[in-house]
Amino acid sequence: MNSKLTDRIATVLFWSSGILIVFILVWFLYRILGDGIPHLTWDFITGKPEEIVAGGGVGPQLFNSFYILFLSLLFSLPVGFGAGIYLAVYAQKNRFTDWIRVSVEALSSVPSIVFALFGALLFVKWFDLKISILSGALTLSLLNLPVLVRVTEEALRAVPSSYFQASLALGSSRWQAIRKVLLPAALPSLITGVTLVAGRALGESAILIFTSGLSVSRYFPDFNPMVMGETLAVHLWYVQATSVVPDAKQIAQGSAALLVIVVLIFNLLIAIPSRLLEKKLSGKK
Amino acid sequence: MPAVKIENLNLYYGEFHALKDIHMSIEDKSITAFIGPSGCGKSTLLRTLNRMNDMIRGVRISGKVVIGGSNIYDPNINVELLRKNVGMVFQQPNPFPKSIYDNVAYGPRIHGITRKAELDEIVEKSLRSAALWDEVKDYLKKSAYGLSGGQQQRLCIARALAVNPQILLMDEPTSALDPISTLKIEELIQQSKNDYTIVIVTHNMQQAARVSNQTAFFLNGEVVEFSDTVKLFSNPQDQRTEDYITGRFG
Image: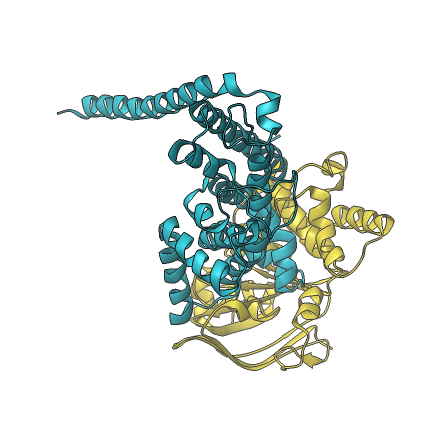
């Protein structure tokens, strides 16, 4: 076979894989949004859920999704960034830090249902936090921590070491170099990492079924972290699996579409400023 | 008093003896060039003068480097203060991914200057000293990466000058640049010698001959010959120096 022909075949192959991916995505969106958007009324998005009669909304679930996301980031970001910075800048290469890396890798491949049961034992029972928004947020942080550590370490390692050297050569401390040069330069990758983690948290169900429960507060919005708090993703599972409301299917379709839309909006809200920032810093504008 | 006095300096990378028994006095407010083939230790010696070798694992250093009256390898020396006094320009232009202004203001800000008027003044003065002000004065808020390679290197010089160092170390500052940018930087080096003590590592013997007052020739971690530049190039005392500058090896 001559090289021209193989080149042509390779090109076709790569093109078709690309098109296949786009097709799958478009089809997903078409089905989910097509089925769900007709149910997305203001009453549905902000209303309280119903257990027996049709016409319930998902307002509290939507609120809880973001509340739990916020709390879990609050717990996991400082530790994740801290450990990532340690591994990227301070850690010597030795057996101990190799072990940390292996542990982080292993943790990031643990199935979420395992985290769910672990969280149920540790936070719900041992610390006696009950099935609550707080237990759910803490367990979610555990799920996201390894990813955050890796993303942070890789983002910082991708920054050219010449920046770090230049800063030190001007008489900065290591921490000043990290804070004023490394972190800003790594910011776009860090933001991508946080978006990844946030998307996972918004869509997570297994963990929250066991730690945050299947019911919502009577009040809305309720900022008490010690009450049960069902999220949108969990609600989607719940109405389809066990609920007895007559319009379960419609609620599921609406919730699915709403979930997709909020994740999309959330990602865009973070990604667009981050892109602009990146352009500004790299001088491509 | 010499700006830098190196006594009995030995440096090892693990088992490798990279600098052997270096003795050297570098004159204040003069330009000193380090020449020699690749791997001869000239950059290594340069980086001992602001302790940038500290970050490399497995480096052991013995002997003394006296700058400003104290041995910089003394355990209670303030390394940050030393590096403020002994600035460095690297082989590859390495501006931060920030605006031109923020690049130059970085050092002063690190060392506690926050007043806008004062920073403005330092930025202008440093960019003028680096012969870059006229080219960038209308684009100070633009990213440093919009500049050409030669401009970036002059920006790095301005950034180094902004913390008002006594000594400026330059590690092959023009090896990544085109001839015109190289010429500009050489002019800049010559104009700065009244204000700074400059030590420059270069692969280019013509460059050493053009810009420096003193030249040290390095070979295999030793200083073979160190004398006035004119003398070293016109009348070398050591056979190895003569072989190198006449192009017989290296």
